[in-house]
Length: 178
Length: 289
Image 1 (cartoon, helix red, strand yellow):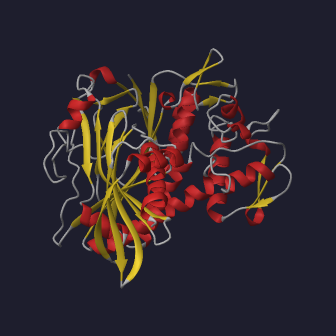
Image 2 (cartoon, chains in turn brown, orange):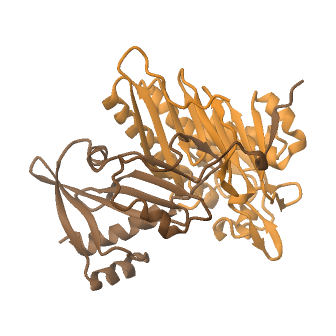
Image 3 (cartoon, rainbow over the protein chains, first blue to last red):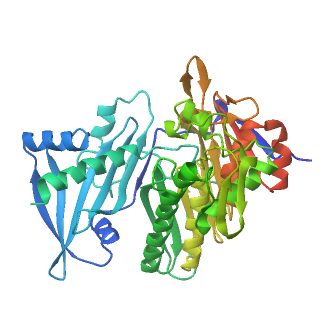
């Protein structure tokens, strides 16, 4: 009778992947996913002053790494419908671009991951790895394993996105709510 | 081994929609295949909402969840819970019984003492899974002070609910993946790559998954040293000690809550694993790094 347990020793793996990357949305498709009821998206130029950055860090407890933020005001049928913000967070091994949608009251409407990239090559320093993404659009082919689509055994905490959302909610309260 | 992972186009126009949201403390990815892209997007919205609903009910960290309410009050009085919560409690209770306690959702006080769960889940001389009464009309009562943590089964359960939601909205094929606990449905097979948590860049050979679920557990995710003792979230209830080291277990079963729960039973009571897997028509992969 065959055993129902198969032992696999990883010193004999079939493949070594240096990274894993998936692109889920462009800005347009993320806007539609977050506001399926429709709306007009007007880009708002947000450049944070030093004081604003300090105030956001104090209120949210999360460091602000970028002085600029990609923000769109959303209007639907002449009424304020909310805000659409694109943000990027970096963990030890992952780089995630996501969209945060707020309703007209500044509450979280939805969060959609736009791009997800992991890297585990220990010989690649983080700065070098990130440089390959500068200027790249999500449609460009990345030099990573892109036929590995479904993985088990790799629970990644979404802590970085959760902290990013906290930071963005403070940004809304202190800067956008005007 | 076959490693094709694309949904094969049929004679009709075919789209694949793939979206990801942070939920359940991890990233939940939903992939669907079908002819109507717009309908699939709406179905995926509903599936994510169903996962959010489960998170709201079951999170041990959220003071207003149903589990937190049970942990505060069910030792003192009978508490009525929602159908969803009652369903997962019945699953947990059944697995605890059939695994002879190897799967145990009442070890929260020990995990809290080790700093792996909030401190308010500690109890003096806590009861066990046999002290949890699941009564008529979705009522729950603890015969002795104890606390529950459904972390060992909740992700898998949420995956099952998301799949049910997608199917109820007429999605015919797809995959829901909650941080590695995943389930494939429809007339489509998916190549799933297993990774060991301590060597994430090494990929083991893919499993072809069709109409089944996979879940993975390992001490690697949580192990640490507490007062000179190595501990993890995988408690052997008989000895009060934790499973530690670099083993990782992936179970394939019909439903994801079951795969999720069985990984704990296989890790904690390996000698009974063969029997349990056969009983549930499941199988397991044990990875060592």
